[in-house]
Picture 1: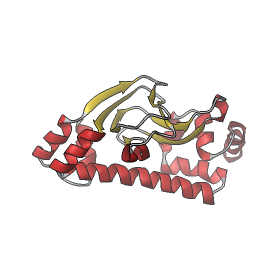
Picture 2 (picture 1 turned 60 degrees about the horizontal axis):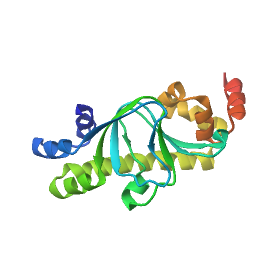
Picture 3 (picture 1 turned 180 degrees about the vertical axis):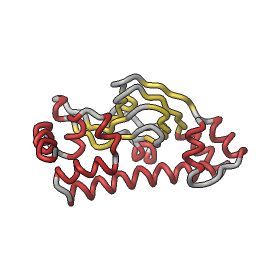
Picture 4 (picture 1 turned 120 degrees about the vertical axis):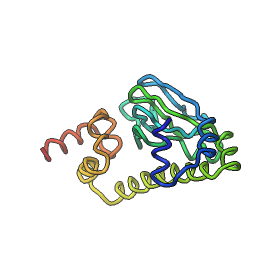
Length: 190
């Protein structure tokens, strides 16, 4: 739980009273590898801070080879199907644990209470929103402006842990190519 406080305090100091209120609302949740954290059609009820593990955002398909991976979150990052969380509408995608995952979560209703009673809640909401927006915006711009090879190479600098810890079939989907095309790209640049 202290990692969350450290993460928040990189942006703003949190007084003890606010921290006690916020931390009292956190619930530890643990998922084993390949567990589904959120299914399509469910409403996201949590914003979570990953203490350990990797979460994948995907649109599942009947043919597993055609699943679309469009995001990842790692240790010391916030994770949520945030559009569903904000709008209280069913999610159009799934969240899956790519490894064993432990996280600290705050529910929608508890976060609303923290918002009204402390300053820290608003900071956490802003931090998670900004982070998720920047990742999404950067990825959209890359899909529109860069070649598949450029997108792959950018992963080495932007998100090096992605390359090391994620199966290549998910990386291929993430950059918008087939596994075979990714294999050719990797061969060409090595």
